[in-house]
Image 1 (tube, rainbow, N blue to C red):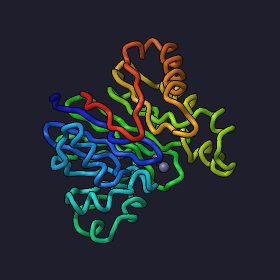
Image 2: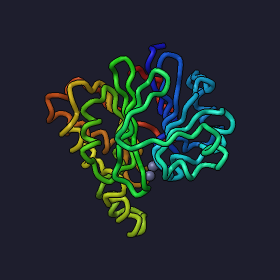
Image 3: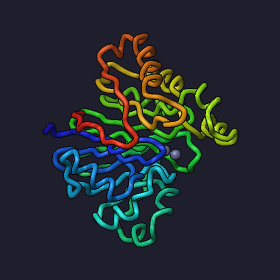
Length: 261
Ligand SMILES: [Zn+2]
Ligand SMILES: [Zn+2]
């Protein structure tokens, strides 16, 4: 097993969690699946839940924190999150010396991993994404953003492996089953990136470092993996910097392979 690797346990509005391990120590980015589902998907991939000493939360929407309470109680893991997210957790976790407040656009250490919180434009206050660096390589997971801001673009550029939102196809969203207020929310600066938005951001800021790009948080109603992958593939062809990057997508209900960073 390589010394720096990750596994996406689930991605999308039904629940998000991503396992990252460096030199035998692991963390979870988000805990939006039940503790039981997290345990099942980890063991399906031969990953050891007892290595997880830390959970990083991006924001308080339920698809990102739903399982946090039970998971943190069961494992005794520490939790890092911005103030607005942290205060949604049970008091005993906040005050029990296990909750650590993250300042957006700053860096902190988790074991041997160096973590940076990247501010997102999203409609939960204090939403951040995370870049995780170890031995000169950087893994970044960015989802839940209505527009890519300067921080997003920086993080895209410094990533060797990037998991990046490609939430919806605009035409499917506008003609799909969602009520108009929800459509408006998703399209807003506090919502989610469309396939086109995502492709534009990668085309603009993806660097030669990028060896793997994983499209994430795909809507099951308003997108399809084929459309999302095609849109991104076309954009990547137009950039000479991205010819070596592999492209794939994350599944909502199945864990990804365990992949080296
Ligand atoms: Zn989400
Ligand atoms: Zn969200």
